Image (cartoon, rainbow, N blue to C red; front, side, top):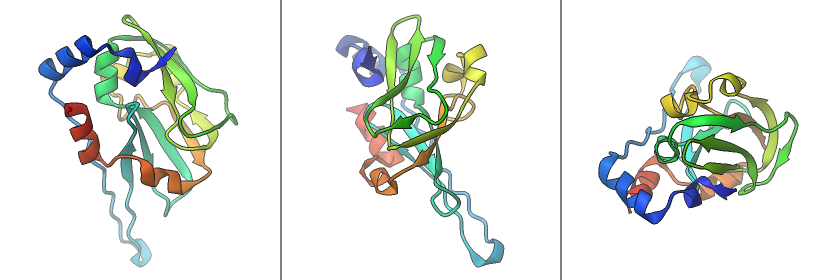
Amino acid sequence: MTSIARSVSFRAFSAIRSSYRVTVQMPRLDRRTFSGSTRVSVIKFTKDHEWIQHDPSVSDIATVGITAYAAHALGDAVFVELPNLDTEVAAGDPFGAVESVKSASDIMSPVSGIVVETNQKLADKPSLINKSPEKDGWILKIKVSDASELDGLMEASEYEAYVKK
């Protein structure tokens, strides 16, 4: 299997770019001022079209999924392979796969860590990947081992420019 980024041919990529308006969910800034603190949750993106949402001020758990761009490129998802709980993953390594009517693609981990939760709704309803890839279609929650790995990932504006290339 290939990564999501590699599974879309150049010709298909060009067709997607011309017919699909790139919309990237901007980082959700959830600001609360309880007891004088401010909480900020940011979404980062990989070149393999995965996203990760992490708020280090709250916990070391992050949520991971594929981007709307990747979901559109893959087509209708028919199966999502989820990792087992307590699986240790390294940044850049595959942890699962999405099979669609067009292809099957590995999902790469944006950071190193241990899988603490998977979205079991995807087992019964893989179409959530297409309908809500950056919300209800999240894939897993990971206990981040090294938060500095997030620094190498793209901000929303960088990702948007990346997919427009």
